[in-house]
Length: 117
Image 1 (tube, rainbow, N blue to C red):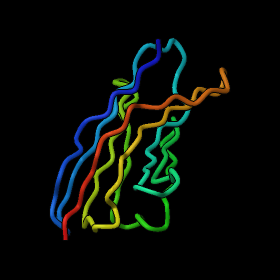
Image 2 (image 1 turned 30 degrees about the horizontal axis):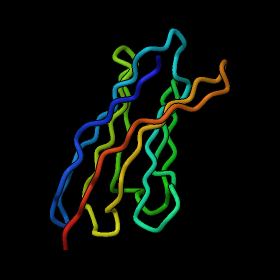
Image 3 (image 1 turned 90 degrees about the vertical axis):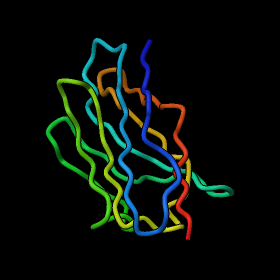
Image 4 (image 1 turned 60 degrees about the vertical axis):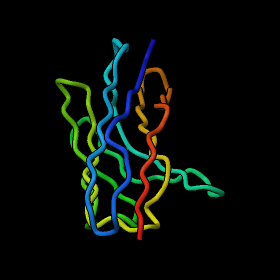
């Protein structure tokens, strides 16, 4: 079955950096888009950044200029480099993968990112 496995979360001080990774496996179809979403306590899940198979990216306004999304198509892996982290970036970060031919989104289990002030 399709699995998305995140890693790289943790605790960091404000102004610090973290790099998240998500390895996708189990699909014979290509993931047309891979991305990251986050959910803070008491809030709805929100888009952080997405990247298409061709490398086009989309970022939430709140992370533009601080976060960089990238993907390694050969490894079916997506990365999120998070710089200049702020306490308001604290959330569970979820990896998302979309397969267009199946019209299906897949989700990882999430990784906690905590930014202390």
